[in-house]
Image (cartoon, rainbow, N blue to C red; front, side, top):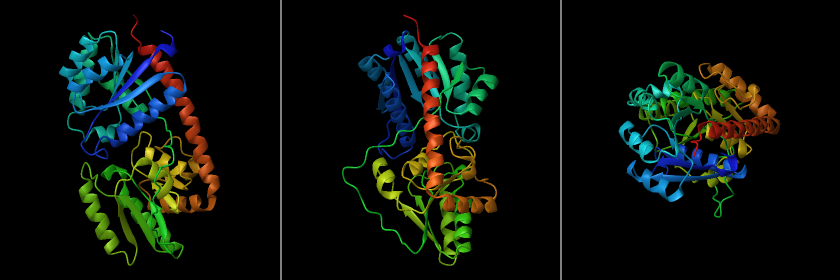
Length: 347
């Protein structure tokens, strides 16, 4: 089947609050659809209330490929869908590395069940946006799996910009994203306090409030207690902004961005920071980021030193990170086009 004839439908689970649990997955799907459309592959994103809505959107769009984002469709329902739409290639795309999967209660049970379904459903595939998870599914669970990486597309400028009131006397450090233990907010906050103190400033450490997951509520309590005892450094808790306002209004006036998490598959927030022109420090798990700006998430001194490098490099560091992001996008498109060809169901 020629690539121009592919029609890809990304399906995410809808939440009542669009900035709820599925927001990152929905953003990821929209970016992938956008970049595939630019390369001649028709791609659409739908968010459904539950698995019963999948059949409706498949009948509506008549895709050649359906990509279900994350583990939320029961094995029984997935089997029913694969049998009903035998001419469609189905792919369950897992978005977490093994450390995160270990905290998702049904992950291993459902991956094993999907693997069992693949023995007699030739139109069912698994995929991951990290090499480690792809290897886990192939080599441990025996899945028919492949690597399908993320890509990044910046949003258009907002129609109604906002102004974020920052204290210019402070070092404003952005560390946005859902608060979970493996995101490492606590250690990053400590490093930000240490770095600001060394340059004779007080820090304003900016985080999102309202998505504390997998024990993140305990992280928030400890963050607040740390800043209360820090001697004038400040924790600033923000609401979740629309994506365009985050990239064009909230991030640009900040001084530094931090995403030095313990495990990542891509990190859209780091890409947002780079798109906004913000000098950003990340962990080596953010594979597209320039290596001088990688910090060890377990070493406060290394994080402090890397923050100094990011501050000194300034615009050059942003350019290096943007170059890495562009390369990752080009590679992702090639991998996706190959993956769609491999998984296509022959008419």
